[in-house]
Length: 135
Image 1 (cartoon, rainbow, N blue to C red):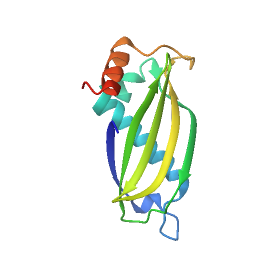
Image 2: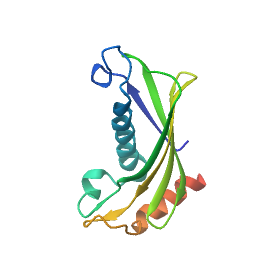
Image 3: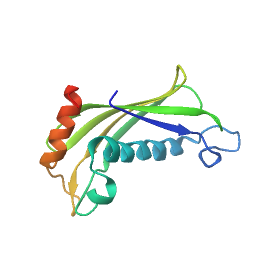
Image 4: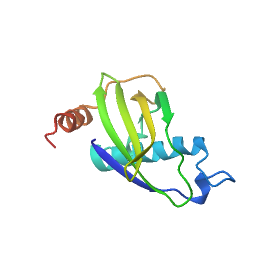
């Protein structure tokens, strides 16, 4: 695990039964990715989006247990692979020792036209160091 993002399950995340409405998990995943880019990689979205972006190209989620209003979960993100323009992430959401969901997702670094571009050298260097455990 390279980055941990705590999240309290709020009323806005829940359906009338008080459990997380699954599309809200995708918003929470995006919040965690945005925090990771800012806090771990040092390339915050507010800087990145001046000519670049990292949209999700694919995402697959296995929901293993419900989360309820008031639960405290933590999204644990692992950078699994860095390609020329792609980044493969695995996110595991935990509440204490219980897995709530596992997401495998691919981000793609794109230019202002939305076309894939190589990762900036500083970002590639930082991510490679993180993956090697030397940060």
